Image (spheres, helix red, strand yellow):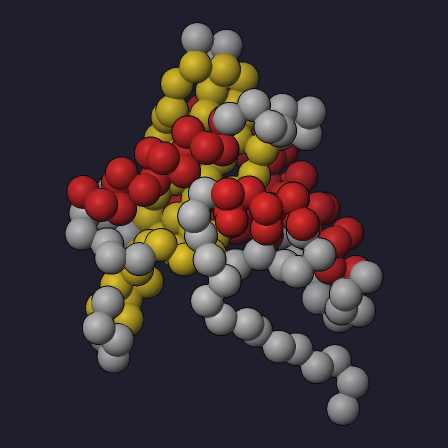
Length: 159
């Protein structure tokens, strides 16, 4: 059985495993592109706690995909207020991660569809996210889903 769930404390251990996988992947990909960029080891626990605390406030969407009682993917999205822009608010996808060995099975696509429907129902005109340049698999996924590059972020580590 497959289902999309709102992540709760019962999913903490599996969520932390996915968030740790995300952190390791990002750090590995970034290491060749930027010698300073590293996601801290405490990030998975902190982001889980923050999102759990904010659940139910209409400020975050913290969902997961379960297959046969196994959490195989999670997506963490938050509201960003943009008072000086026409759009006023957007939904920002902070994290989208699938369990190693479970990729390319449509799990993230179903979480994204749920998120897009939620954004539409809640009046969001825009969904945004960031992908680090070396993450070609993620870049291709988002482009296939209709997301387009909008802005580039530059970093300089030696000056």
